[in-house]
Length: 303
Image (cartoon, rainbow, N blue to C red):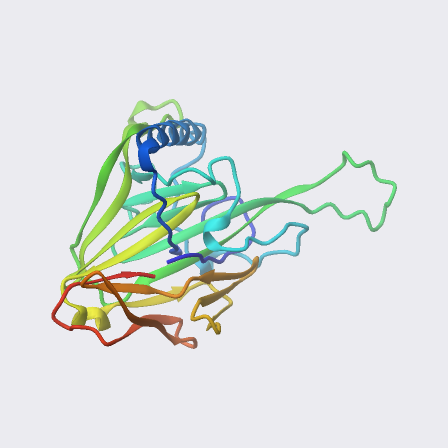
């Protein structure tokens, strides 16, 4: 997938989760150094967060309405800017530093993705200037009031199997540690990070792999039989609206502006096949519609 999210005001994470996008970047001959330095920088950044409490898996309904603020909306779910926004995503194994629902988490400049057994969620935050100069136009510029606003989007994997295995692949050299408070029993040391994670048999005969680069998340569905594609169904939660544009993209309305997921692509026998999103906007449900496929042959979908 290729972009998405939703949420409101407040500096803490809400209670559950929300979102998924996509994109893969080839690292070429510099792949090793790129992954090494990105993991190193990500590790340092995450350690700096050790003063925070355990991150909860957010849910859109727990977030307040987003106030009007003088900040530009993101152009896409994966386009959030920040110090780490252009680096490959590192998928961090949960060893107690996050809500127990989250099996893995991945961060970029302004947001965090949480991966549970049956959903994916994202929380995005930004700092905005909320100073009101209307009553005192001569107020010194230095007397500003800043606040943090955020929004979350959650995607549920409808009808997915229970008790699935989610594992990290291609371990990164960087590890993450959290030293919160004075009690060592609450510390987390050496949490592993990975270049991708895979949901095995999320739906019968279907794996879902997540990877990412440049702050973007890429989901790839791997089907043993194309005929099972009808089992893939996603329900979005937290958006203001869902629609399809003339280019077949999924448009997700959020408090920060519209986000877009590119039209899906599918390959079978190393050849592209016809595919499009199916949408029930009222229910917030999305699926894939295929044409001219061999139902008994493997299929790969990049939404």
